[in-house]
Amino acid sequence: MNNIMSSEIKVEKLNSVYIRITAEADIRRELSEYFSFEVPGYKFTPQYRSRVWDGKIRLYSYATGQMYVGLYPYLKDWCNKKNVKIDEINEILTFNRVSAADIDGLINSYDLSITPRDYQIDAFKFALENDRGLILSPTASGKSLISYMLLRHYLNVIDNNILIIVPTTSLVEQLYKDFKQYGYDVENNVSRKYHGYDIDENKRVVISTWQSLYKLPKTFFENFGAVIGDEAHLFKAVSLTKIMTKLVDCKYRIGMTGTLDDSKTHKLVLQGLFGQVNKVVDTKTLMDKKQLSDLKIVCLILKHNDEEAKKLYGCKYHEELEYLATSEARNKYIRNLALNLQGNTLCLFQLVEKHGKKLYELIKNKAENNREIFFVYGGVDAEQREQVRAITEKSDNAIIVASYGTFSTGINIRNLHNLIFASPSKSRIRNLQSIGRGLRLGDNKNTATLYDISDDLTYKDKKNFTLTHFQQRINIYNEEGFNYDIHSVNLK
Picture 1 (cartoon, rainbow, N blue to C red):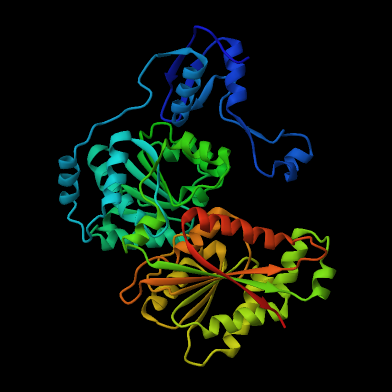
Picture 2: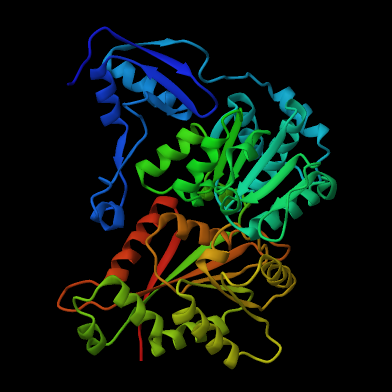
């Protein structure tokens, strides 16, 4: 059915999570189809293979007529194209006009220890005007200050509490310290929730990982009137949905992220739960303004010998990864690269036991005795990670060998000069978030270099998996306007 003539639907806002659409059956069927999307990689999931799931996420329920409030703009667009009239039973989305003078007055009243940049003020204004939304601002652009300004505003406009959700315990600690640095009395006003910390009911602000929240009962979320989701792209979709759908009376809902992946489903789930996307600035603009470090990318294609390439011809992806992680020649090359670089270096890996520990031992055993070498992975607690970060801030020649899961996102190291991608990845989010670790300006640092290591195991004109992934990273670098050079290296 391509067009529905002179039809009408009724839309009612049920709460801060859902709207309900009342319509004829044929319109509901079209909406159900239009708002259904295949999940990337669904064919490999146990649920699909056992035929209990068809691989689709349905953002509109044909049975109940319910859909996330944040998807209302998409519903309006669909209705406009289909010539369907909308009867709003109550107000769905609110807009509050806020002047520049109002914004200036609010910011001045917070007595900040740091002056917000123009794009941070724009993001703050967007959140105040829309009540809900998804702020897209690149890694190292200062999203914690945006969160803090919103926190101060919400404390003044609502009587109940404020929930800030982050993906890692390290980010809980970092936000807590950032807020203290901005001038806030965190000891008396902020609770941290993750393993080892319990909520103080006398404090109105809670900073927590999503892992600590998603299993909690709905009653826990009743007293929150505002939620801020930092690094929202990293929340697992099911867990995020469980948390956000329990916040039924939470009017103010702001998500923040530096990157969104290319999955339409992922974007629409985030927008449905938070609101429309507002991109406030991009990385290249901040580099041009000297607000982020200049980035140079050195792409190193390691050419493996024909005998190894022949052995891996026709292998599966995980077999190729295991070979790369255990390749003595490759690991020694990475070791020598890390030890010969000047300044602080972050070397990121994927497999802890098979790769990370070996790299760490290789580097540690050949490093000079007075050189700081750190190993960080999921088994290292938040306090120890913070100690590593603090020591590196004061050092000028430290090496951190860290897993992507612990140090690719959110960790704020201003004095980081070099990045090494020791494990190949095609993930747009992981790559851009990892690059962000090196973009923060330091007292004596305004440039950063990324060493992107890829591997050529081509045999009989068939390219290997990770070489194809490297080409996808090059596409990302081109889209972002990053400068890069490509060099081939014969492994011995």
